[in-house]
Length: 318
Image 1 (cartoon, rainbow, N blue to C red):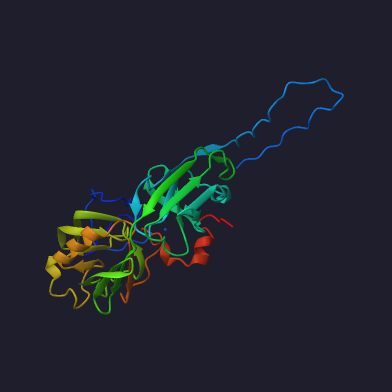
Image 2 (cartoon, one colour):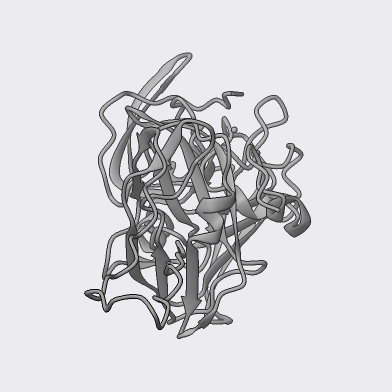
């Protein structure tokens, strides 16, 4: 079963969904200044004066807000996400004003820009990730000194931000559609092996790397011929893929793929995984028979090659 939702719906940690859901894919993706010359020796003494700071560029204000908050902890696959209140046309000042460190050292990552409908009035979002996943048990710091910086013709950023967040253990799930098995590791050590049932041929599960977006103890899922309240649901795409319990599909779990696209688990296994996983954890799907998850369908950032990512997406950054 796959829960459908507009792929722009906000993903937040452990937030219950209001709208009913159904299993199906949707396809929609520092300033400087100079002082004046010193007075000539022959000129009368003058009172000292300080140089004036440069005028702030004129333009409509662009506000930035972050998904993550100070002191929060996330899985190693979680990008830093910033939302912008205008469709900026130049990202060079934004990226130049950004400094990210991991355990006090430069992160070496890059921003990628894409359209958004997560928050009303914030039509653009920027994701920051490194070439590989964040290290586990790390401290991540962001300084985003954008206030007063240009954002394109007629646009100027009106605020600056900072962020201190953490990563937890490196929890990675590998799901194999050919063996109908899911192997979960934490910091490289095996934790669980669960049988699964993925999407059938007509509604295949996306392949590729996905990131846990939210957890719901009970998720309403609707579709042709069903309207169910599904326990232990862990969202991994905006278009409606979850790990979830499927008591009605017990005879197929571990044997064959028969779902509408979600990863069906036995009830006890689904609860164990729900209790174990955190938002930002990684799930890698192979052998599903489906296409690779689009990068915009949730946190599919890791499905883009690093070279592509560094180019900046909707706005060029180099």
